[in-house]
Image 1 (spheres, helix red, strand yellow):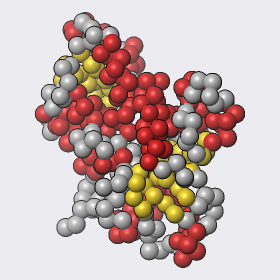
Image 2 (cartoon, rainbow, N blue to C red):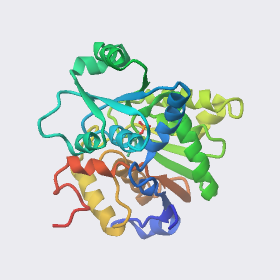
Image 3 (cartoon, protein in one colour):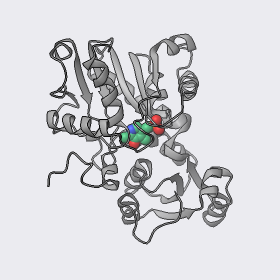
Image 4 (tube, rainbow, N blue to C red):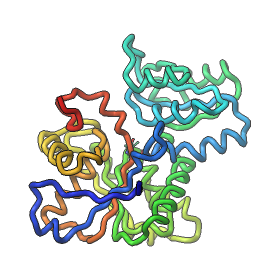
Length: 312
Ligand SMILES: *Cc1c(COP(=O)(O)O)cnc(C)c1O
């Protein structure tokens, strides 16, 4: 199996867009079967650092449906660490599917009040956990920061080694860590980043700053700036929300590409945005690589009616 596979434009797209564009998908969703997508890559340098520091406990933060927490549980399961997760909000008696997997994988779940959660490393809860366990290595929410981005720079290197002939890459963003890592790789072509969040136009500077830190002297800010295209108006109603147009799109896309499922929070929105641009023939590249960042486990938090990959 090749990790790069062709995407078919949905049936409603004009013939001229079909003739003009080639879009392939890098199937990050098929990597590391237990922990697919970008989150595994974001963890790698954190794990190396935890090992160097001789940590015996690794802790992190996330929401009850978080792909990061899910990948954290699966990635740490075979490793000799105690895994601890601070979960946003109270734990419901009926755990979400993501949290249930984590509990099964041996992660210790610590509920947090929303205000505690917002304080992150400065919260009394973190002090309590440090006090309780001693030497805890903390991974930021979403696996972010410089070490998270470094793992995605390595990922970009691996992806580029398969085929470096694309005119542009497309990726979804939440914190922008993945995008920063991809951007900082020397051979990455023009990078189009589509934010799943509402009202975060300033994130472009965060991505650029983080990429600059990582790219050493090989690429200056000007070069990185010229390669980065940040889109902040494709959230379709807000984080994890679906507009009726997006639901229609996901159905049409699933019919055309039944074996290339999109996730409900990130990739569905970036794919919708570029296919819209292709359908109106305003997308300025011929060969595009869409990087699938995983997250399919997130469908378990939605009803079957919105999930186009469930057939009743
Ligand atoms: C977390 C996540 C992203 C966003 O990654 P960031 O590094 O936070 O920008 C994109 N896609 C999927 C499927 C994710 O789970």
